[in-house]
Length: 478
Image (cartoon, rainbow, N blue to C red; front, side, top):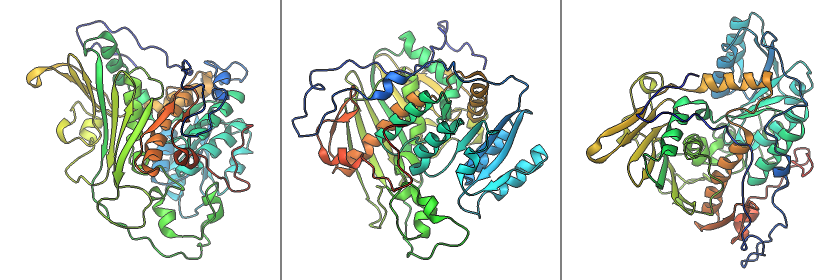
């Protein structure tokens, strides 16, 4: 994408996205935690495996066909695969895979119109992975399947586009990186704002010093609501769904339509409002604009079920504060604000900036000189001085198409994608820490960036150690 001149200082150019993490061990990290949490003796082993470029796997020429498949054919998966099908004449969609036979019909019929032949409908993703003709997959399952599906794809020699949030625990993200590096497979995380050119101009502006030193960053995802929820009774699973495969790594439970259709309200399948609503998008965007800072030193989440005393696992409101030493970052999420609005098509695809005051997905970056508002999904950014004076700005459009094209280009070139798995893991860890703090009783969690370990709470550390069902394990050796 062509970069634009947007403020009086010359743009310095976008720095390459780093795949590595730079952490210096502290004395505190090297000893056993005073709270009794068992500390690892070494940093996570995935860091030794990180490669900026893949050289052992062959790419494709521009004229070669790229064969793709969809894993998980819900509404967003359907939208995504249709965008991929429209992205170039040398793109072919061979499979639409879903464990539920009632899903995927629209994707199949629309793809058939676009490419002239009907993609194959399958229930089991392993049939897709066994097909050597398939180059890449789009993983659009519920969150508890993301890591295992991506790891299996890498092992099968497939490149991966995996939806946000990319993992269901801290260790899952680590294992995904190891799989990508060991098998030299592209993993593009579904945080498409990393393919927005205005995100890079915002980063350049902050790097120029015009905003001053960063003091605080506020990220929000405030959705319509409050929303009532009535959990249905357990029933026999309909013949149209492979319920055991839908559950996958999660605990075995009877079929329940509430779990099936409203899985975002259950910890077994979801990260709750901080993931399902999309706050990971603007959290990851904020990290990119700030120059991809490392893991925070601590996380404290306050929240609860304030509006409906129902059987949902997840809170309807959360406020998390992350300590980065030189600045604080807050993440505010919930579904109790009917007066807040996301960006509409006029903002996402036009030249109009969001109405910042009641924008539900706004990022505020406060510097010692000026402040910046940032909007996701094409919202752009504006910098304000005193008296609401706009002193710099840049606009964009919804970056999904650019993100898909970047994924397909990386399948061909073997370059690392914009939403690379290492940065996806960094952002996902913040989501996990927010939820673990809440689930541990709204407790501040001290975190070791070097060892990626919670230092002061055994309950939170235990909650992050997922138990997988037999046949769906994620093992240490990938």
